[in-house]
Image (cartoon, rainbow, N blue to C red):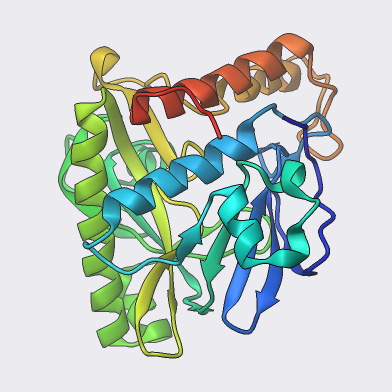
Length: 304
């Protein structure tokens, strides 16, 4: 499979994010293409991570299939041959889309990240440890880092074009979207996370927290969109090594973050772009971490 940092397809490209590019297929359909770009601390690295785009796309596709019948979602197909049949303009571009492209229904995206936390970690832990709150709202005293939250906390965030998303209260979400939409998005978020948490745990993975995006269709449906419970949008922890009261190892770009932390502490990187050149062993370790997440979750190696 080719390494891909940027796609060049015979469709109108309407958006380019840190990882994904979005193409317009027609009025009702989009093509999402996940590159092998990787970012850390809001900086995109110069070196791509082999197979990362395929892992993100195919993990999402696997989850969408698990969620069929539970709620509506945007995936039409993530199979390259089927996509080419449906979008003839992509003939001759199979290698560029194999594994990493998803043909999707189109909708109007709600401007809120629907974050749900089943365990206290990351930015939520840092705020709690300092202030005893999450998004300014008080949490019970005595919680541990990486401790399980029961019930999980619905913790919406604003969608940032660059930089970090900002945690907001559910009350603020109601002001933005209205009470009815807020209640339905929270219900769907809890529904999907509950299913995902239980399925992943059967495969030895704890999904500590995750974020979802939703859109409204012209038919008036709310559909789940974008990536779903991937190592980029979630914290995946190995269940057999879980110990509350400390940080947990994770199935994501942790080898990359760890190496960058060393560079920052040594004064070789100030945290701004451009990032330092990644050593081959860091690239390889990060790729292997993503592929292991796919294998553990689905029970099979990544093939397409």
